[in-house]
Image (cartoon, rainbow, N blue to C red; front, side, top):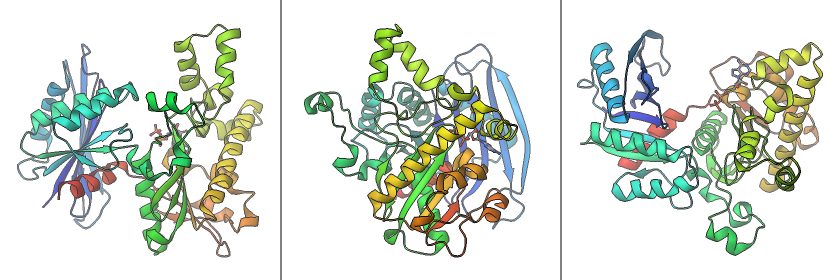
Length: 409
Ligand code: ADP
């Protein structure tokens, strides 16, 4: 039996899932948060499966909350082990064979899931320059987990790795070459684990080999990106040097004329930290309409709210631009998929992103789109559509577990 523990660690919290890879069933999941604060918190949920063959949990048992100080990640892992001991499942009965760690930035160095040794740890540490908000937290989790689970393999799974297949013309900015090289400025792309999972699930769903398909995947969550995938390989993606570029997001601008930053520095007196905050936290849907939850925006728009209307129009305009651009880069498209919080739940966004592509044989069926059941792969294109349009629930933890297992064998 192989069981993988998946860990997604930030600087003051980590999430985990224990996954039985036979049937890819989640046995338990949890969250340890407020590490280093006076009152830490741990939540542990045991997933009970009615039928051993069912991939999704039939019943989730009660969740337990543990309130006490958790000084560091090592203590956090101890809290997790205590929760397993108290509530199950028993780690003796389901011993993890490997731990898979989500790491945001693998730079140009890590192009696949990588077993972790001290050298890899150092590599992740060096890449903190490129991901100062993410890699240090992942590293704390890795170090603590390697202490808590000293006898099993640990694997780093990078958000950027899937996009390392992009050709130079897609990842190179037209910036002074020496300057760019010195500072490692290029497009890296993010959400790679999700784009990979969704494109593979979509190929399996349509019953065609991944290698034959031209796909576009829209990952629309609070953060959002779209990827052009040719034969299973990412050839272009909307996020770039950082996760700020590309689509309009919950709180991020996406694409912006870079001269605006110079103008705001010169004319509005904004410093580097101000700009960082404005671009990453106060823009996007929040900046345009004061809310980043798509449910709010859709209902406000239906009530005639002009700010919500404009915000959605800008959001959809950007989606259409990328859909067209990626069809051009791929030389056509066979499958378009929507995933993540907005993509899986908002028919209006899916329809709006593709509504001008009838000329290219993309036809969304309004009833299928509106009535798409949640939590499963659904085809929303009409029977006469040349292009298959799908809603595909993403599962980054399962993908991390799969890659972890593959990297260990
Ligand atoms: P992230 O992982 O980037 O935080 P998610 O993929 O969980 O994001 O997506 C979160 C967003 O999805 C929310 O901000 C909200 O706009 C949207 N969302 C979540 N559930 C729904 C829903 N039922 N209907 C419409 N939008 C939803």
